[in-house]
Length: 183
Image (cartoon, rainbow, N blue to C red; front, top):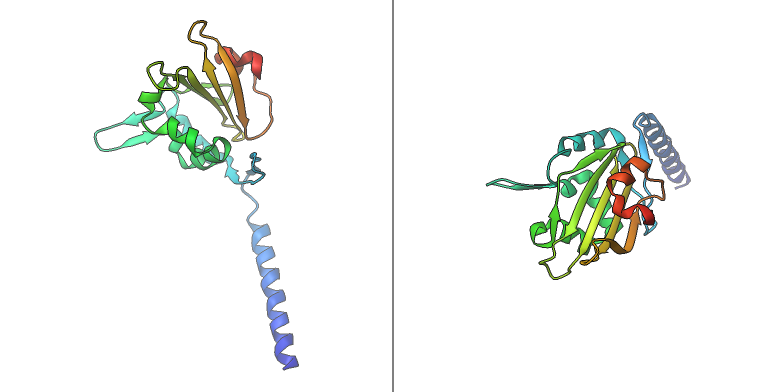
């Protein structure tokens, strides 16, 4: 019986050594730890963000006869964005988006993807707008939810959701000038 326990202990130690060696051998990929409000973290490989550049200059929703593609539904973004802003707001940005928002093409400035969803003044929530900034270099996401004053066109009640508290470059903020005072 004692020999059996010793044998099991040796096997367990060997399994731990093998798993530690396997983990340390796989450290050649660049991985970023993301901080989200719920204190959970996920990993994202920087190289994979490169595939998102094909969206620059296109609308964040592409509809064809057979299917609909969405920039925000890309696997690198979807899960992280839902954790950051919640499924309710995410659904409004991806389902029947034309009924909820007026959208323009995705812009790119200083390594940031810039998406602007302006409230459709014919929808239920008049003036409800969202601007999304995604840093291609490190995967940081900044989302500003705000109401556009129908009379002045100026934003009010701006709420920021950020994966990390990081500065947004001035050139990017110039592109989203209506948010400049709230950053």
